[in-house]
Length: 192
Image (cartoon, rainbow, N blue to C red; front, side):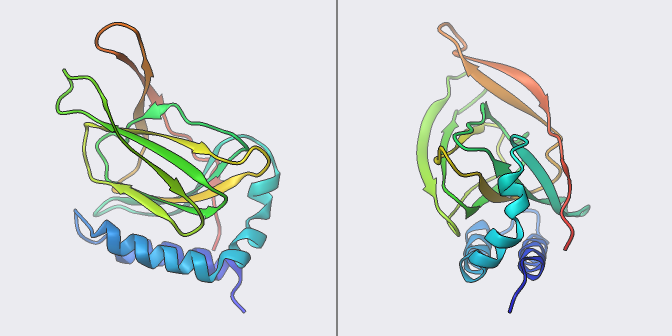
């Protein structure tokens, strides 16, 4: 029987193995990670129950990291009903998968920094489902835990360390969105 630590290790190892190029095949990586999450859903839900029940708010947990090419693998805990501000990823590529619960992801893009953001789409992610984005400074999204009772858990892989990023707030006048610099915080490492 697989333990959740075996499952986390499999997710981390697959993420690191598929990201040895500067521009990895994110669709292929999403399929492999999604199959691991589907196969090991119960072990992951049971093993990560502390993250789902400790109610300390939104948290990022480091699962793995590599320097060249830069990759970070994180597990995030989303309290019931939690919504992120609209935010960018500092030009990094990324992939996000639901491990437990369901997430809504609204994404925007723009042709240049002098133009308004345009709604690009909305995805709903259940366990094993993924969304991804290329390295692009003209991309932002907002994520929301769809449950009002349960903490959701997601797996995120980024093409580098997402230390600094910007959040965006809509305003009534041009440029229509006001940005504010943010610093990403890691709650700690997940041991596998």
